[in-house]
Image 1 (cartoon, rainbow, N blue to C red):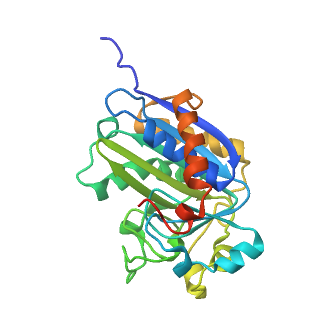
Image 2 (tube, rainbow, N blue to C red; image 1 turned 90 degrees about the horizontal axis):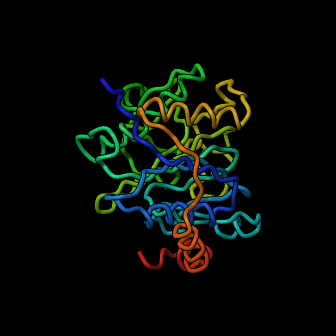
Length: 273
């Protein structure tokens, strides 16, 4: 019998970039994806300088202290995905784009979060951490699914917990025949810093969160990226092939950067939603 060849995914590793460029690249990958012919893609990246990202439907002036953001020179960008504000600093970030047929079956959109975040559980477990979903391990009485302005203040059913505390966050966008998802893996815990840029700065919003450093993981970034991509390939049973942005993706990224992600109309006001 001939051994079945593992499906191929593109692996696109980009350096730590400003938030506007990161979001332009993510949307370019989504915009350029053809569910009938494109290879699925996993992108791994970081943020420099630290940036606040708003969920797609949030109103910046309602949830952020924009005067403080400007005074501290902290950029604000808007994601194409929903959810609450995230302060991106000292983290590994992933994004992926695929068609539903390119991943294991999911019974619902909600269940697809379980399917698509399974590699994160595998990754954390390779680091010796006790990782599980909030639906399975949240402390008794925890309210799951409550909407919060600050991402780390709430827990969804398939958020990942380590020893009962939330680590990172994930968000998804669906188009016809396409799934896009991205998420954060905090190396250091910057939730308290991020909270200082919110209008509602209640201390409890930053409680119950952890980072890899909090968990005693001090491996260097390159090793963590290697373990993360290895966990992804192993969990999904795929082969990752290193790649760069195509000419079309690069063109789309440049256009999105100038017309959308470098503008306050999109980032602060959500113009074009």
